[in-house]
Image 1 (spheres, rainbow, N blue to C red):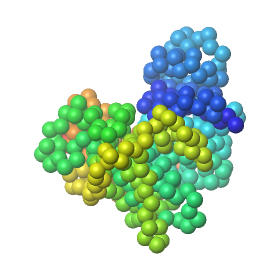
Image 2: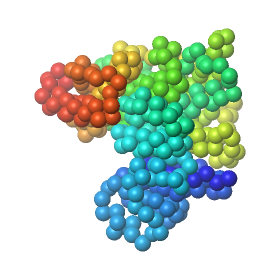
Image 3: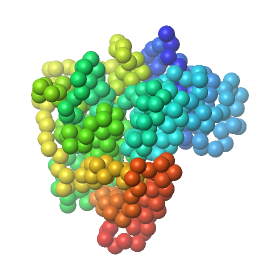
Image 4: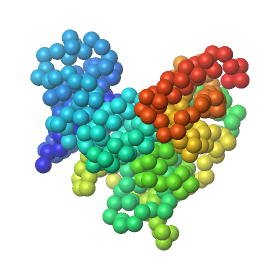
Length: 381
Ligand code: MG
């Protein structure tokens, strides 16, 4: 049976790797929808290769450049809920993932989710809608895929989730060293090839904090029972502990095509010769270390925002997005990213169990607040 896929964010890192998996199994997967935000040339190539029925391009001037194809232009949401789509891959970055994710779960689709912000900011709304509409959320992030793979086949809930983190390029740096790191250094991740936003998030450990919040919603696990360990080899992608103390782990080389493929082929596992096999003669030690929450405060800020709930995670995400843009534009130091997020969270008047509009309002408030703080607050520098 051929599964019909829509890939939202098809020209990004996860989107391109999703299409590599589709290319490896042309009889299993068929692309019916493609959506991209900026890279029109790559989108045009993908359209001519995969011949989708529906296309969304958000960068303007699409109709002229992409004209002539046998496809219909639809919004992200309309592609996500289209009756012809079986599984929606949400590979857009930032808050643009939220509305299509909601549209897909409301339509009862399987949602292969790579976008972090949607679950982090609106986890309660999305998981409720998914339950009500029998939509399945299939995690693509390597850590959540690992946890999901460890849980599959078990009849009892896990007692603890252990998320691993590579530690990023600045593992074991001192606060003074961190204050001096450059954009170029921060964009060089030791184990994963990813987009710019998530690469910086990995360097600050914010990425792991967002993943803790996601794990809370995906696996219905209290925050106190989610642990983070630094594992620089990036071979163990996460672990699950059960009532008897037994721990299961999922291991592989760090290659996003594996968790993408598992989300698409679940419950089956497909033999993809392109995926590297672990060579044990090259694996001589796997180490695990406690994260340093004083030097990398973003992880602590994220866990605290998750525990407080309400609109705090929306503020966390939005403040982080703007602070990263300021850092990439070389307007603030690396360590200012955490300072700005911390100040935005401290000044936020939160709302409990927010509606979608209140989440959006908190998001907009945080973006403006961080710009104000960066422009005027001498404490940041
Ligand atoms: Mg991850």
